[in-house]
Image 1 (spheres, one colour):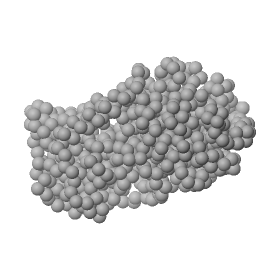
Image 2 (tube, rainbow, N blue to C red):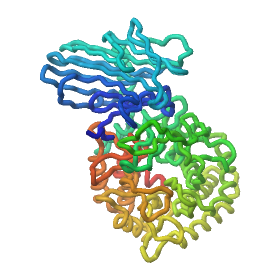
Image 3 (cartoon, one colour):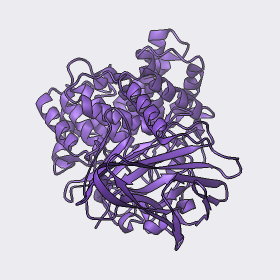
Image 4 (spheres, helix red, strand yellow):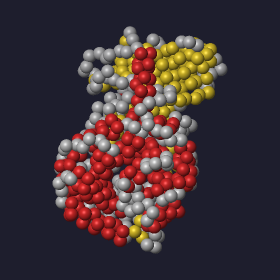
Length: 596
């Protein structure tokens, strides 16, 4: 039976994360960072590519939840003989040389026969480590990595697999603590599982209590913010798009990408989501990550970076992994980082302007860097690029890219007007007007009464839903209303929004894809901005129903097969959920603030 993406839950410690299936199997974990090679990679292959399962030996009924206000996952298994709860979490590390995964099985009633099966396969499921028995459990070592497993359960090796059988009775607890360390470092700091659980629960709930949300959807907002916190890289403040690679946009297809990186264009949306939720420190950390990552020559600005701002994200294929449900190739790294995508200059200017709008202290170094980026953009904005969706076909004059160039100069003018900063403001005003005139002339199709994906074509693009949010035209402008109506008519799949129609656009790849969930939230935002609040609310609540039982969302959704597609969980989807919830709450929401 297919192991559907929505059947997974997420635990993490803001350094890395693990995906745990409903049956108790950790099928994906990279150590020690999100973008490190996986030691459990069954998600993209078979159990032989690495996994760790703890589960009853008998047929079960299963339910699961997160402990309220935390990312601690509880899975309850009921058998004919009794019931147990499996608690999974990742505590904060004691230092930067240790990562822990804690699993505790508690007996609720009767007694339950349990089993554990552990297959370490480092380097994305390829390398079998040297496993040795220890008095406390076992150690597994290969090259730079060593993992120690502490447990009282008797373990034995068979066919390069570690197995153990045990019985848990009512009131009993059996624990497992797995600790990663660099193999050349001595020892790890062992901490009692119950102490770790209490500490982790307290830290999570203290953070969650800061959530400032009184909308009707506060539970969904809080869960999305906790998920975004898990996808943050705590040492630097960067926010990853997702903790996974190569979960497909089409089952069996080749639209499979590595999303374990930080995208500049996500910055503005994320900043609004954190600030709207009351998390100023996270917004500040994200902005500072952005300034560090973007530093350097403007023509070398990348659209994405590693969690600490790394620039080398070279893409390669992993041929020994069969891919999720045969979706190949499995890719590591992402060559889209080499593309020219003009919208990122506008996103960067917008996020810095928004940060100061929300009273984050100005960055002393930011304006100098912005000036250099604007000088570059003056000569580059008229070039074709690869667009918001990172198409691998020929570069084009994407309407959204041109609008975001307009945003860059618009925010530059506003910076000067508001803060009396130095700059050639008259030249920027002239460029702003020139870009606006060109977009309205070449990016708008009077016959469709809609803006279009690229100049001199009639294809639609969901990114056009963002035009009123960035303030390019008022939401009441007939051209904006016409664009929203055109997208609702021609770019929908069973009530959800497609990014574009791949069969009509040369994006360099064969096949189709599912509905992009962030775009569907953008439609709700646009409907609210043009005054159709009831339709916007209906759209938003339909999207909330798509979340899995733990409140998580993937990148895309297939309405025909009723299943998630793409990398999971997807930060962009959860950021959009938070922002739309606030856009639909009385008072100015993020969309109106941004349009400002």
